[in-house]
Length: 329
Image 1 (cartoon, rainbow, N blue to C red):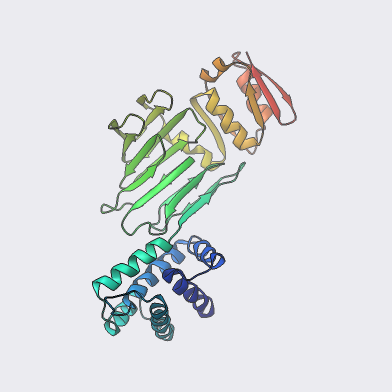
Image 2: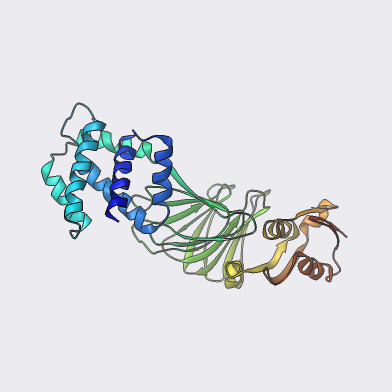
């Protein structure tokens, strides 16, 4: 374990100073995003890094900072039982930190930081924890992006797709999930947020607590929703509506279910394409406005089972040739 951290410490020294090659920087990003513990270690080592800056108000010497950082870490490894904050305090007593050198090093570090991207491939879902302990489920074809400084001065996440969030409460740092059309702001709650870039609607459904929804199409329009309410934005018109639902159903996909709660056929088609890796076309554009309700178990029910159920409503018909499916009325 000590050998592993020795390797990571050397990478971090180069990473913080901006002297690390592209493959090394990628290794740091992959390692830090692998677990909350790794992210906390990176943030703690950043404290030691700034504590190790040379007291020179005229310039920021990255090589000198690297040397002192690793020297401080050598002492750290010999006293592994001491807490990170105790170590940071001990190292800080060895070096006088001027504001200018700290600020220069801080800007250098922030420039070196890259965004972390987590994706769920088509046909599957992914579960992950953010550095603050927030649980996130990502549905098929979904991507979230956040800064490696997440949890320090902000908790901002960008979403493309569908995610279920159980947000760790923090009254000091609100949690924001942003898309082009809608931004959700919370302190600590559970909600489902769906907004794939090719969807016609952006929808947030609240399972617990309270969230503030901002309409990014019609700037200034906001809505506060509570448990078992959903906010929906029509991407073409920008119209936002709030309605009552059984919000628990909206996150059933995390348990392997496909649930349609009066959803547009255009969005249902995309959901089926992502879940079953098929290509679906509609013969007429008017069909996109049809809405359906349904609940299916993806692993137990095939795409044919779902299409048969939709056809049984008498509102559409389908033809299937391999992975190509055509819907008609």
